[in-house]
Amino acid sequence: MGCCDSKFLTSESTHPEKLPTHHQQPHSGSRAPTHHPSLPAGSDPESGAAPPFSEFSFSDLKTATNNFSSDYIVSESGEKAPNVVYKGRLNNRRWIAVKKFTKLAWPDPKQFADEAWGVGKLRHRRLANLIGYCCDGDERLLVAEYMPTDTLAKHLFHWENQTIEWAMRLRVAFHIAEALDYCSTEGRPLYHDLNAYRVLFDEDGDPRLSCFGLMRNSRDGKSYSTNLAYTPPEYLRNGRVTPESVIYSFGTVLLDLLSGKHIPPSHALDMIRGKNIILLMDSHLEGKFSTEEATVVVNLASQCLQYEPRERPNRKDLVSTLAPLQTKPDVPSYVMLGIPKHEEAPPTPQRPLSAMGEACSRMDLTAIHQILVMTHYRDDEGTNELSFQEWTQQMRDMLEARKRGDYAFRDKDFKAAIDCYSQFIDVGTMVSPTVFARRSLCYLLNEQPDAALRDAMQAQCVYPDWPTAFYMQSVALAKLDMHKDAGDMLNEATTLEEKRQRGGRGS
Image (cartoon, rainbow, N blue to C red):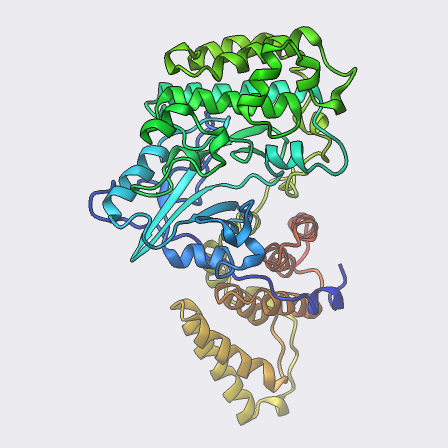
């Protein structure tokens, strides 16, 4: 990348991001979180690699969602939804889904926190796991893993390029059955308003069950928001959700998968009783599904939709019935769903990284600060050759400004450091790549990635082969969501460091 490439100098600033605050003392009555929300979870294959559950501050989530911008809304009903869901992005680049409840939904913070912690302890690869919550004044929010590939409803009812193939529909049914079975085993058998909008697809196209349905929409609110035609009959009688009600709702999802339409259960049961299974099936699947498999699913749906709750199957019955129908276990979900393969973020270079490289690859600004403090001005040697005449009072004033900037930088007063370093730079008599690198970091810590990138590029102009200049560019580019370019910069910096270790200058 050229050191004066205008493509980056004119980049628009992205939304500022902050690292979630780790609250040691959450609301009264809730457990103290023991993990920071930005840390990765363990390697348990069942967990889906979700981060540990924790509490977020309202400012964390406000920043992540760009002040709850309407552009970030992902709720199917948009702003009309009673409890709006937003996507957001944390400082560690993890995307999240944030459900914002109405002001009066959960007046008791302790009750909300306890309910959230109950759901937050669940971890499974078939769930879009709950990773945090917020109880801040009157604000009540839930934070979950973000699923970027839309809902089952979108793929079934509003598809654009292709409908979901039969084997993928069977996979969806099986995965959601597994999720329900897991939740029941862990003591959370109730799921509120299970429908095709609650089934989400992750970046690999794998179906997951939204964790939001494991919590009620309010302390005393309704558990079903959909049309009454799809509501379990016992809920209409007494307003209570039972484990058997969840099975009924699962039956409606099976109907969606079979028909590709949102058919009221009463109509579907009439077709099933009349042996009109072909009429029930999605016409887009004609000639592309197994009649035997479809019959199994139709019979299972019929059992789930029985009027009497006790006549419905349990969750383990769902899993055991659907497991034998998984005929393409080796075909990735993204292939069957017809979406592009998810591309991972630029990998860390295969060669070992220096401490600076490791810090930049993690975007650990605190570690970068420590390294720049320790390095001091070692890498500025030879970048300035001043005559005796240039040692004027102006020069002494300029060096004094740099000294004040160094003290402020060391003491983490980054705004003051920016001011002092700017005085040094603006005089222009002496150029220092280290000052540009330090001011670049100050800008990053003040959520100004555009300015940080400009300074890192200026450091490269002063010292073209300086790895630190490239490292700082990689962090600024990542902050600007230009991840491919950030990966390229990280690789260039690593290459330059290797050359330096073989006898070059700088670090």
